[in-house]
Length: 495
Image (cartoon, rainbow, N blue to C red; front, side, top):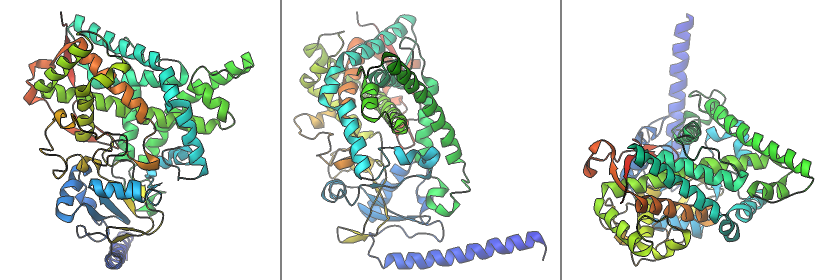
């Protein structure tokens, strides 16, 4: 038998054996009382059902198989939850059992998962890091103390839009919002701008962040067939190693400079969040580097994406924009920048933000969970190790909860007590329970002020004379959902 024939024979034999094992496991799985789901194919299971927009594909499948649904993704058993009732069961009533993470292989690059508060299991170390985050960055006192900083960054965003207005140029809204959110974070943590506030810069860092989100979120064979991990057949971990390395090098340099300055002055000052972190964990430099990576990757992308979607929906729905501008004129005064203290008096603006989170949740499946013990849910058994996806994109468009769910109608939140803070499971863009996003308090301060200031300072029209109803609303999928085509809009002087 020649070599080629041997290889073909070997591959066919191996495939047949794997198929038989897979069929045996599927039969065994069905006896475990798992939730219903589409019939899996041998070896690959239901992988072909995912498509390039899994949030939409899994929402459609749930309409057939129900709000709790099992998929076999290669060798990985995955349960998808697509209703607010089931989300509450997992994220509140049985929060501890669902608190572990299903870690994508991409996040193993440079051992990021070992020191990341996002991916660590709920244990003593995680609790310590989470407590440090809350006290050093996101406590009410810390956020109040840094309000003037955020105000300056929003002023710079409005000034940049004003420059574009004078020059007759369109604003790339997502890019401008990214630059602002990047500088808010970099000043809060490092007391420096990482992007020029007066120029259209920061695109390289934005591309880097989006590359990380895409690699971490897209289907990776290694996640479905763990035995292929050492091969890294799609090169995902190799690319993530390069991306993480570039971000860590940037932050490592800033931290090294700060340490040198502290040694020079021989005192442990506390001028920003980095000083606070070093005062607590200077001996654990690696943890601080990884914490910064978490904060910048997660915080900049989700904030800028939310603002871009909100502006997109306002330009797509001129009547909503008209009502928002009328409220701002009445409460704040036409042409004025919004203060954080104004937000409580702007119910329609707050409703626009909630409606944006409902219809365009930044992270459509939240961060994947994994049950760390056998769990009973709705009479079904989820065996230990099952991956769990909470489809908040589907929950936000559930017609049983939201009348006319695909329409952008902020009015649905006027007079409603529903909020995004993890207690109302119809609307959980930040998650809920012990693993709710720690950056929620900062996001809910900066996003409304950025949006309100932009629409109160200018009139806006779409570049190229595009009519509102013709605006492209397509999205692209990573861990986060961004607009497929960037929103470019012309700011117009008010008077």
